[in-house]
Amino acid sequence: MNVPLVDTMRATGRRLAEQGLKSCDVVTDLDETVWDWSTSILGQPLFAFAHVEWIHVRRHMTALLAGIVEGSEDIPVRVWTAGYGYRVDRVCDQIPELARALCLGTPNQRAEAALHCCTRVSFLNGLIEHPEILRDGKTVRVSSKIPGIPAASGRPQVEAARILLDDRRENCELFVAGYPDRMAIHLVGAQRKWTSSVRKLRPWIPIDRTWAPSVARAFSTFLSGARGVVEAHPDACNEAYQTVRIRLPHTVAYREWIGPGRRIRHLLAHHPPSSNA
Image (cartoon, rainbow, N blue to C red; front, side, top):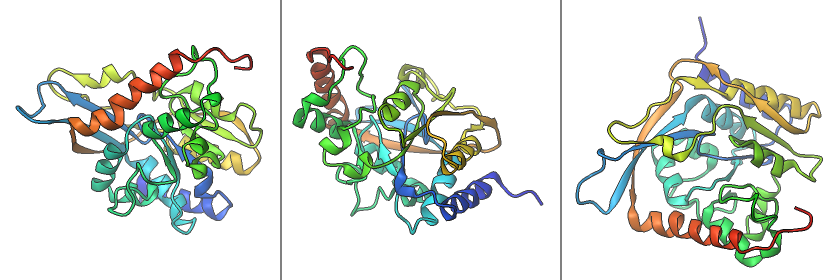
């Protein structure tokens, strides 16, 4: 009897935890890493003060992370995203296994307030408190994983993580630069331009593929002593995604995503180049 890949990945996560991988050592990006997203221009509600997105949650990656958390006494993995907390919470509301893995979405643990979660608002707060953290403004963007930002924004749990999952190679390189005990796992082929997810008619639906088995192998090499940037490649699979529909009020999107993004870009554009960037 063939065991479903979701069950295999959950068991693999538990086994990795038993072998010494700590969930608190893992920090993950969300968009294009734990899920893909899409929206439809003509699929929006009429005369509404909100917009709708379809979030395609990667089932096997979720199961892998959940298994690691289960084997680590339910300590959540850390989150580092350029997105905003309200959106993260709404996804976790509908995917209980993801909510357990990230320990987010419950009434008592919202992403923007969680000390193990760094969002776009956190990024802005960190820059305001400690602008000296900035590197060369020409090479840093809103989605950059700049070392020091989580701690500067009051998220030392995120700063303490030693393994990053991210779809952007440059973020992986930023994360490990100057940190010999860190690993960054680059999900090759996962990165998308946000405009590619916006469709006029029907929302975009990703093809079935998963990075989870390759990520699990990278975790295993970390336990064996590997460090630096490593690559994870996708495999073909069945039923790769669980799709949920979320409603995002415009006022919240502006307060937690659009507004902070504009302020961050302004700070980056007006920061003088660093001599050691």
